[in-house]
Image (cartoon, rainbow, N blue to C red):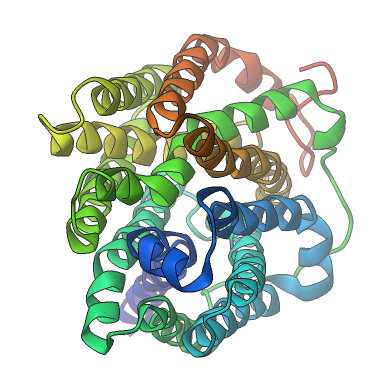
Length: 405
């Protein structure tokens, strides 16, 4: 009886991780396939509509930086529940309103909800899946990206069925409600209440800042793709459904990479070779969008998706590698994601601004290529020796990072 109960608890843990991940990107990716209709009804420019992607990401960054205090005050259980309620509320409001102001406010509300969950999940995974951290992060990352792809694919279908773009945005309250019920009824096995105090000081640490910069820049392309990839092809006379399906196609390869690359990472300690492959795939995909956008769009999007899916999961794994204890790992991951998402928030806004200035998305894709190649060069500094030797001598309960790392 006991083994069966243990297996059931394990399955519940995996199901909850997937359910949480599925709710973290529809607030972003449901916008782009419907952008032309939204702009037509609200009068938003390309640059102002970019805020619909940038504002949630800014929230993700700011709330993640407060993750330690939020966790201490709310605890994981209430914090995640509040995040899901905020996502649900944002989708419900979008279903009922059609003004630009409503879209911007709900971008903030939904983004804050996403940020709450993202700030709490890494430490939860580090504790709950002690022997399978890389795999669990891969499943979480894959479900996160899968949710984004489903939203891009289904939002225009739902909007077309109801002849209302608001329906395509608001329908995502349903998975948020389902996840909230699962979270409340099936809490993680071995759930422990939050203790007070801080054991890590990433603000004072050069390696923490380097990890944050790296996380931000290797994942910048995702926010630009979510915000502007369908719009790029809409301008080439693709339909909303076709352009949205292209984003969903990209997500297939994100999910594959987010599952496969962490599984490969589980076999060793050096993340650099896998990161190099992932960044190279991104660079080739963006180059294809610049040079041959109509010749093989699915090839370029597949490369971009594979690279982005792998980079998100691997950069989180790399961050958690620097800390032995779940609590310190959670604090470092919150800091890295906080700064990283603030960097990410610049990407869709900058892309929209460059589109306004030049009349084309090409210059923005070149900026992404330069950023990816720069991070490919930087990858070499993340040798396991630069942090694992210190981990062996760190006292229990503290960060493996030193102020001079």
